[in-house]
Every structure is written in structure tokens, then in C-alpha cells.
Amino acid sequence: MIRSMRASRRAARWILLPQALLWVAACGSDGFQGYDPPPETGPSFQYGQWTPGPNDTCTKAQHDAYSVVGPDGKRYPTWHPPVDPATGCSFGHDHGRDPRGSKLYQDVGPIPFGLANEALDTYDPQNVRHEDHFGHKVEWENDIEFDLGSDVAGSLFKIKCDVLTKLHQGTHSKDAFTNNLHELVYHLKCSDGTELHTVFMAAIGTPGEFTRSCDGNVHVTVGPATPANSPNGGGQRVIPDRTCVEQFMLVPPGQQSDFFSALHESWQTSNSVRTQDGHTLAHFDPYYQVFFPSRFYDPSLTDITGRPISVCYEVTPSGNRASGSLCDNSTQHGTILNLTYDDPRSLFDGVRRGVDINSNQIDNKDGPTTWYTDPFGKNARTHSFPGSLRQYIAKIDNNYGFNVHGPGIGFNRDYGNVSVHAPN
Amino acid sequence: MNGKPRTLLCLATTIVVLLGSAVTLQAQDVPSRRGPFIGFGFGYGSAKLSCNLCQESREGNVTGFAKMGYALTEQFLLGLEVNAWYDKQDVSKLLGSFGLSFWMYPSRTSGFYLKAGGGLSKYSASKDDDHFKTSAFSGQIGVGYDVAISRSVAIGPYANFIGTSSSEFHFNDTVVDGSANSSLIQVGLSVTFH
Image 1: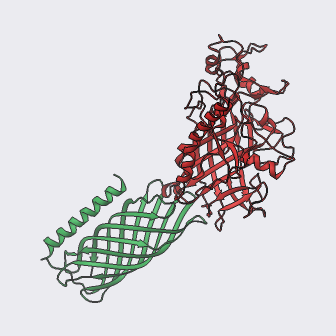
Image 2: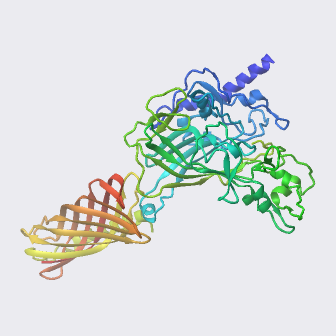
């Protein structure tokens, strides 16, 4: 047992060594250069939460080896591949794109998962918000050319950006039916000087409800959110429910299911970093999309969580049923019976995702570049305080009078793997 | 053809023409450079807008100028000059300048001249309701050769470079960039009446 732990520690050192070297390499680059990690003080709440399920072959120790010390000195889980390259064992879940390929990685280093949640523990201990491990999803793209929203501007100017983002976007449980607070990490660096390095609990839409994905006019009220004092946010969480499944997935004989319309999730954030006096230092509104998640809202079920894979076996009294490749390939054309939602063979596992970058506005011409906000990105001050989060906002006013907005990224990627399964 | 190769080709052609003119036409008569004069020219222009956001590529299209002034001596001329470069593809772009210019002919018996000047310049780009513009001080230098076709009329090749100081660049009513500047390279054929 002790030998096993020592081996794990040795493995952890080898895994963390490249990350440490990248932190060192960040010295000497221009602009934001990251923050020196402080001495480690102990584990965060998030660290060590994951334990292997029956379909996973990696150990908890192998998983915990993928960790990083956050700016608060606590150890956090961080990105890892679905399959451990050192041993070939599988974790059964994915965290999106390997951030080490991002040009911003040399400045920001490994992303601690749950840093903002941890800050909220300190800021408001009576109203904590703990999220699971599976939902942390990373996406990034280098050198993306932004649309300038004007033919004239497009003919004269060019703005290219690197973006690296992480949202906790769990699409396997009932959590997001009610809860609108989700940790958002957002790094952006553009050729015009626009630069943001932020982390906070993004309030996405209204707590206690979501917007029906197949009818944007319908707000489905579910129940109280956690924490109870969750603030209203801009944007909305667009999530499918049983109505969408019946409309687009359960179709008459001879028709094909429209899985996209039935099960598309779109978490449309509208984020601002504001000072104590209400001045908006930065505003950005990326939309995080998930196709074919492993859940939908079904108020008729005791846990209010419907499973698309179960719908593959369903026949309505009128003879409607699911028909199409996702069900066919998951069930081998119906020959595999009773697949559960967490079976790796189910293709409803939330591995197809993308992010619409949209607009990124900064009004911080006079600086400073370093601000300390509460865990929601508000009440920014120039000095830290208990439960505060450090944000970097470039000294710039990038309001040019035309609509600069980024494209969608990641939509052509599939983070699936034969071992990845819900919860993911 | 892309802007940069096209510009280089035109510059090379102009240099060859200027040198050729200087060699083959040196012995010919020069026009009388006395009293008032007026002239104009047309050719190819390569314009560039430089700023923090700018694409920093040169764009080529039609250019021209008009001038009028007075010959102080046979070798020194002073006048007013307006230059313009225009590009109309999807977006209309106009780079224009207006100012005082000074022509110097090193030899009384040659049509070869050097030119310098300064004034104001304006760059604009527009389509539908969107309008970009910047105004700045400008300076120019040039070179050319006048070949007499009569006692009072001369034609010949010319080349100019016009550059501007940094200034604010506006999109409708918003300042896009506080340090934009533009430049224009012109090559063409001019006609001058004395």
C-alpha cells in the first residue's frame, strides 16, 4: 500500500514536472505573465472528489496526480485526458481539449478546477456552491480571426485572438435544471491589446428555472437553486425537456428523429466584471453548446432526470419511437437491450461540444490591470479581501463603435472515446 | 495580382521609364518654365493605412493629382497641389491630400525635377451607413521628368510618396485608434502647361 502511494507520488512528480517547467518558461514573455504559485497549504474541496466507477480502470491516486496548486495555495484537480497515457487506464470522463496546446497556456499554466467555488466557501460560508468533477470542460483555439461586424471595418482592420476557456457544464445530472452558478475560467489575448484572464462563478440565467431548448419562449420553473441566494445572471441556460424529446426524438414510423433539436443544450453566458461603484470593466458573452447530452428534464420522474438512451427503447401509445443513428449505433440497432445512461456504449454522453466566443468588451483604459473581485466577478477592488479572486484586465478601451465578435470554436471536435461515458 | 507585387512592378516600371527618359530625352528642348503654370497627372497609386488594428497591407488603384502655381525662377517652382487615390470595390476608399509644393529643377536645360511639399491629408472609407475617416498633416517628396511637346506644354513620368502624421481614426462618431497614419505611393504620367 505504502509502495503504491510512493509510486503514485513519483508518477505525480513526473506529471507535474512539465507543468512546473511551463510556469518557469512563462517568465520573460510580454503582458500577463501568470502568477507565481504560492506554497501549498492543503487540498481544496474539489481535490480528490473523483473515485472510479465500475466502468473506469484508473485508480483515484492516478486521477489525483493530475493536480495543480492554485493561487490560493490549495491543491486542485486539473485537466487530464480520458485515458492516462502513462498506464493506459481510463477515467471514463473527458475535460475537453488539452490546454497545453493553447498559446495562452505558457502564461496561465494548468487550470485549477473549482477555484471560484472554493473562494465562495470563504466569501459566503453559509451559501456554498460545490460542483462535481465531471463538468469541467476546457476549450481553446489559437489565432482566431474575429468578425468586425462591418464591411468597412473588415476591409481595413484585422483582429486575431487566442482564447482558452473552461466552464463547469455538467450535462448528466439535474444540477443545471435549477442551479445557475457555474465556475467559468476565461482567458483571451488579442492583437489589438484586448486581454482578459478571469475566473469567477458565472450566474447564467435565472436560478430555479431554465429555458426550453425547443421553444425559447418557455421558461421551465423547477425548484429552488443551490445556493438559495444565487444571484440572477444575464443570459440563459437552454436545456431540453420531455416536451422536446416527444416533439423531435419520438417520431412516427418512417420518420427520422431530429436528435439535435431534441437534445441540444446552449448555456448562454453574459458576464461582467464590475467595480464596487458599478462600473463595468469587462463584459463578454460566450455561449457554451453541448450536443447529445445524457439528460433531459422530465418532471414525471422521481429524480426529474430523463435519459435519452432510455428513450431509444421507448414506444408511445401512438406508435412513435426514436429512430436514427445515435440510437441505432448505441444499441446496435436494438440488439443491445437495457443500456443504462452511464454505459460507455451510449452515444448520449455529452462529448460533442463547442463555444461561440461572441463579443469581448473592455473599458479599463486607466487601469489597473489587476483587480480583486468577489466570487461572482463583482465588487472589484484594487486589493484582495477574504474570498476574493484575482482578475487580469488589460488597460484598454476596445469600444471601436463596431461589433467585434469571435467565431465558434470546437464544433468539429469529438471528445469521445470508447471509455468515456456519462456522467461526463 | 496582389497589392504588393503589383506595387513593386509599377515602381520598377517607373524607375525604368524615368531613367530611360533621362537618357534619351536629355538633349531635347525643355519647356519654358516661366510665370504661372497648371497641370495634372494620372497613374497608379498604392495606399496603406497603418494603426494598431490595421491590416497593414497596401492597396493599389487609380490615382491622380492637379497642380497650379508660379515659377519663381526657371529652376524653382512653387504651387498648390491636390492628390487623390480612390478605390471602389465593396467599400469606397479615398485618400486625398492638399497642400503647398515646391519643384526644383537641378539643371536649367533638363526636365528632371525633385519635389517636396506639405499640407493636409484625409483618408476615408465608407459603405452604407458606416464611415471611417482620419485627417492629418501630410508631407510629400517626389521625382519626375518633363518632356517638352511644345514651348509651353510638357509631359512626363512622375513618382510621389505622401505620408501623414499620426492622428485619430474615427468610425462614425467613435475613435477607433488614436495613432493612425496613411501613406500613398504614386506613379504616373503628368501634363504641365506653362
